[in-house]
Amino acid sequence: MSDRPPLKAVAGLAPASKLPKPPPRRVRPVDETAPEPVQDSGGGGEAAPQASRRPATATEPRGKRRPLPGGVGPLRGTTLSLPVDLVSQVRERARAEGVVLGELLLDALTATREDLRGQFKDNQAAVSDGLFVRRSRRASNGATAHLGVRLLAENLDVIDKLVAEVGAPSRSALIAAALRMYLSR
Image (cartoon, rainbow, N blue to C red; front, side, top):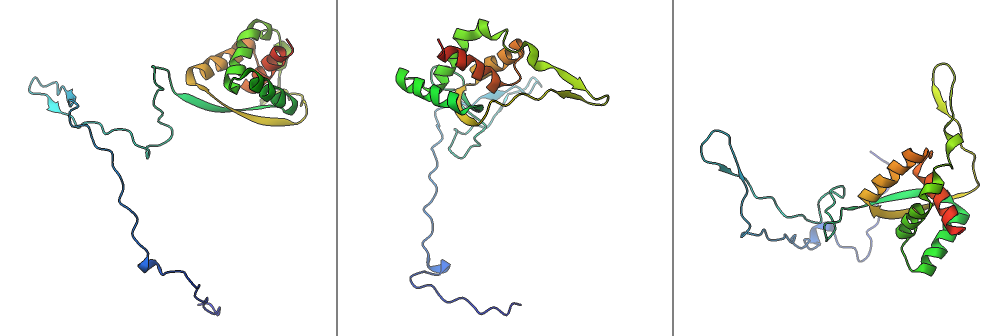
């Protein structure tokens, strides 16, 4: 045991046994009128009823995203590492145009798509030391800032395909080049 003296009681602090119990959890009611799906047992007999799926609740894991209204897919967040000066220009332009950052980013990629093809030709030089293949280090353009954007998952997939198509070293490098060209117009 310890030779430390016991702590003094704190004035106004109630013991745990005297605290009120938390309120009961509110549960969403299950729609009783929804038809239960049936599963074919494949044996030629009667189909066995399947338990109805419970409605989505706020306690479900964050990874399971439901589509947005109108049949549009779920949003996915990404963080871009961009030069500090470019981030401030992007934020000012988005504010001036009254659009969100993601829309400005998509506008920039759409407007500069053809010009991006020649931007990254010499960037993918790989060097082998005999055992491992290593990518050449990219030149640093100074301090960078993180810019978080939320885009439709489909749009992020298109951006990733564009990264591979033009040979950009990363999503951030592609978007930085597109934004620089777009903002200079």
